[in-house]
Length: 348
Ligand code: PS7
Ligand code: MN
Ligand code: MN
Ligand code: MN
Ligand code: MN
Ligand code: MN
Image (cartoon, rainbow, N blue to C red):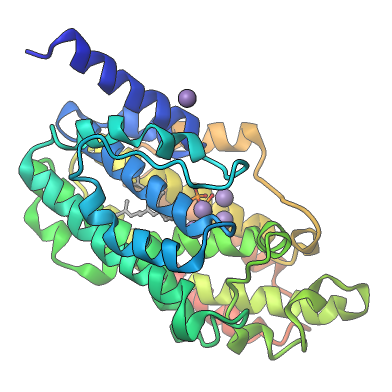
């Protein structure tokens, strides 16, 4: 039985979850009891790590030291962090991180180990990209660099979640064995987010699109916003969308292997949001100027309909069809996109 003080700490953690996450808070809270707290704490630990990664006002050496040691920080009772820039988003979470640590230490040791392991791998990956060879603005040069960065910040989340699912017994051990499938689940979300957030990230002084792609179309990454490069910008965008479409068959394969209803909903909802976002951004030059988002009503429809594999496949079919209709024969990537859609159609 939990004491009243412990209940209050757990409640604080769920408040932090609702404070820091637009999209994951609801689906995490719907998870079966056995997994809910572990996934909530996994989220909060990684949100803390990402808040450090994102803070451009932190001294670089200090940032790298924190990123590389964060897997130990989560075992230090009483640890809090107040060094973030005053305007850093989600700073409040780190100011009260002792609460997260207390709850983390109450999880089953098996769950703690999964979370600490992924935190170590992600923190080291983020540190590599924040410093050293990736320090320049051209940080993400090749498509390989792009895949590796997305693996660190999202594919690894997929590994960790699959490990938690398997450890809980709600899913079979098999779900955690095929690492490529778990990786794709994270990559598809992260890459779609990176395309959609072109403008926001540019304004923050960040560029995540690989130069190997945008360099085919413009000299400078920010040229994509210029009216005189409109056609180049459209072709570049379709090249990026083409890159993301690669992961769709693996996403559907992963989802088809799930057995538990609450785990299925938790996994499927973000993926249908992503395919809907991808259809919205394709050939949509607004992304170079402002933050575009799927409509609230559409999001609600997607959430209520993502209940089983048949419905999820229907949703993917609908949005793949939207992309197919928007694909223009004059686009240099027209043929490759048609082929990628063909590969997905074998699935849907
Ligand atoms: C533990 C649920 C389901 C097998 C904080 C979920 C930021 C897209 O740019 O908030 O900070 O605003 O829009 C999530 C695989 C990770 C990948 C990664 C952890 C799916 C720190 C989500 C969330 C794997 C690095 C949030 C990857 O986007 O970002 C839990 C299976 C955190 C998942 C970051 C991005 C996530 C992201 P931003 P967002
Ligand atoms: Mn972030
Ligand atoms: Mn980040
Ligand atoms: Mn406070
Ligand atoms: Mn983003
Ligand atoms: Mn974001």
